[in-house]
Image (tube, rainbow, N blue to C red):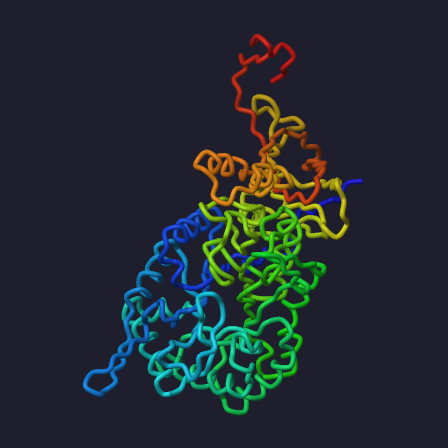
Length: 511
């Protein structure tokens, strides 16, 4: 029995799924491979904002010190930062600024995180930290204009509730950092957007104290932010990990958590940004390369906009080095794209979302049906991973706009063209092809050509009759399949003398 999709929209499709994407650390955007990956993502998906760590890390060269004749000098330099931001803007992206980590010359200690050694200690001088923030934002305003920079959210630090990312996970010290930073931001321009606390999963105990602190001291907060991951404990193997995943609903529960914890506080009505999310929090977990990852995340992309104002996939590219320089082309990296801009199944999930219309007609545990302004209907469907089905059946009766005509434009029952793109264990799945090649760590040019070809989704098309303004879709989805189906009314413009049955080999064809 078909699910009858309503003709009238039930809601707009939230743009929260594409508002932001992660990069890793900002200096990676200076590399050609990362820049190419961002360009591919913008061309086929179209994100609005991009967020990364390490704006003040030493490799960006913003905070500089020199000592001459016993006198210490500080200089703020923006050579690399300008190149990164200019590159974003040229692609139609804006930065979602994360203020961190601590420059070594300003750090109070030597604790670092990641292979690239981001310093996670408080500033040894809060006035110097404020001068750094002030100088950077004033530079942005002077270079890009205040109206532009006001559109860039500014987040204070990253996951301070974890001792790996903030020394001792010292909550009071983070509140001190937040206050000093937020007041500095507003001193530059009162309309700049500042927020935090960018909590990792498990930070529930921070929300109420954060709200109490900023309220009592009247500290500016324009938005709140948090992260979401659904993986269990890491099972380590050489150069990688495996992890079990909790149900995808766990991600949506984490999306909802900030508003739940802040419901009775002065921050209750603020925008909520999930500035990182994914299945696994590890950059060396093979699940990220799979069709399972795409099918798992499909219901999250479909429903996440009901809960938050943005949720940022971590990350756009496997040009990424938190755990170390990757040891193979496919290594379980976070990226939507592997190295050499090879598209992964989750990339196609996002590209399929970009084909949807702005109005939601129906949403369920295995589908999202939308309508475009011209009346076209587009369906995103997936085989739910929690069911473990090799084959999943979905039958939909979808509305087709008036004006569909039969042969020669003379009316009649009419038809609709159905165009279907899919990724699964075989189609749009370079990881499967790479495994069948023997998992080459450094593929040859010919192997790369094959992997690019195998990364393309399957494309199928046919037509279906339109009866009483409706077309029936019978979709069979394979294991871990995600598919997008575009239903377009057909207006037959063939001249009356066309007869395909007269072409040799097409005797049984009918126009």
